[in-house]
Image (cartoon, rainbow, N blue to C red; front, side):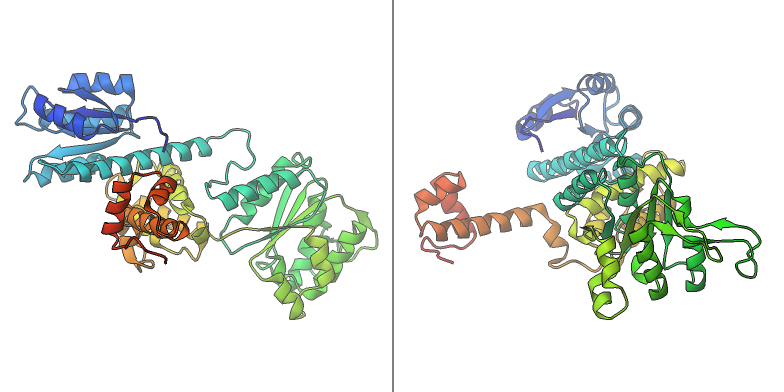
Length: 456
């Protein structure tokens, strides 16, 4: 998050509570409003990412009508704004109603400032994530706009695709099913000098062996029973463009020799034909299998592999791409909700946690299907963990491992232990390296049960 203080709009008609909240939330640039009209004016002026609001507002503070009217106007004017509703201690019914309308969360008065700050920070992170995702999704002119990621490894792969796109080399994409191999292949084609030619894709595992040869190389009229006319194969159709051979590891050995000859000579013969036909096409292939293991097992030709694998790109599974499952989930929610006329929808914290905890063995394809089902099945505009319907098998450490306080404390503990070991227990030097005061370091050591002579 940026070092710049973020704007928080506080809608509260009690001046004393206004002052208390401004003091409690001094890490934010707070602006306040006492009634609905002033709140709307502040919303338009400052465009805050997060709003806290009391449902009881003038002219009738004991009635929630004005509060719900304001909530509806905020969600209509700034649907991405995260609204946290403050309610009476026993007013759960109105709190649930507010969340059903689209509020991000609710807190009962009196509230614990530290707990509310954590919720505010989570709301800001969600807002920023959705804004970044929208920016990535609407990029114009980028052939890799379909690759939504913040993972350093995937970003390096995107840069690699951009580099090799202009080179006349064959590219092999390796990765589990559903990791986005065809998206990258299409991006490579769009970035290449062949972008005005056709992008032709064929799945070698989806076509029976006895039909795959004719699909690839075409056939002449009368070449076999049922060949009533001359038909071009996929290789010939892709002339001057790109041919994407998906699941190349399933290509039969008999066709591997014929494909190798084409790659060497750049000519084909249709089935039943005698004429050699020159074809200018770029080959991009993909597989989820271990090709080198297939070679050792005698199921894939080594010479064909080296023809196809001039550039090899290994795509990591979704579970190894930090943060991408949630980033993609938000993108799918927006797109699928729009396609199905569901308006503005969002994921609850519990839904985000379930997405982060799941291993996604089916990768992006499984995630997209889960979000599509959840968008259709959700009762309101907030998608819950139950709507997504994942088998909740907690990751190592359970949901506690997803708690920011727990993660932060564990990171602090490890840092203190490592630095104290490095400086041989010198507290003054350790505090200097950690960028904290000595009293703060002593407090951390006491909290974590570490002695001054810690050497571990």
